Amino acid sequence: MNHIFKGELIRPIQIKISPLKKQFYDKPTLELAKSLLGCLLVKKTEEGVASGFIVETEAYIGPDDRAAHSYNNRRTKRTEVMFRESGLVYTFVMHTHCLVNIVSGGPEKPEAVLIRAIEPFTGIDLMKQRRGMANIKNLTNGPGKLTKALGITMDDYGHCIAEPPLFISKGFQPEKISQGKRIGIENSGEAKDYPWRFWISENPFVSRKKADT
Image 1 (cartoon, rainbow, N blue to C red):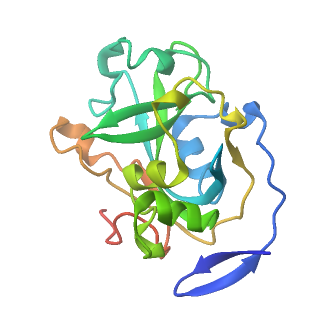
Image 2 (cartoon, rainbow, N blue to C red):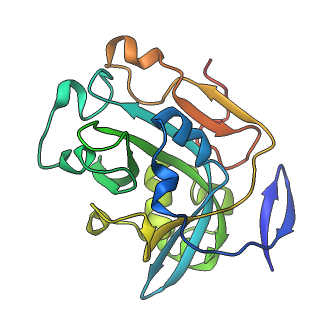
């Protein structure tokens, strides 16, 4: 029996952990960003298995989205995977932190969904060890924090998210989803105001609690 947070409380939850089929990712990027909320992100390593429920995402829709790495069809070694099929892992390093995205949009439509925060589920002691802290609420409430806690690295670039060792499983259905502006993209013109950030309302692991509407 594992547990899931609900507000300040913890409730038990039992789920069957198995990768979602790759077809799950064949949907419009904004829809995918919302559909991922409540799903379970799992990473298996030699150290053990760690997982958490996705509680916050951001959509990036290139080539017309100035906040996207693929803006104006920018095709580089870093963005190459974004031009491939949906359901692949796009990792990149920003300020020494590895961030994880799921490619969407389909071939030659370079779009992706950034996973911004997760709620710890299994392997919590391993997450604490990796992050060097005991405060569970600060383990995974940010895109760089969650990758370090789960052991996601640049080696996961291009991996199919429908297969181990890094995969997404069915989780739970959020009771309420909030929507607002994305974070940390102030220099992206009008794109900074697009309401393409989604999060599970009132979840304590969301990276920014205040709704940016």
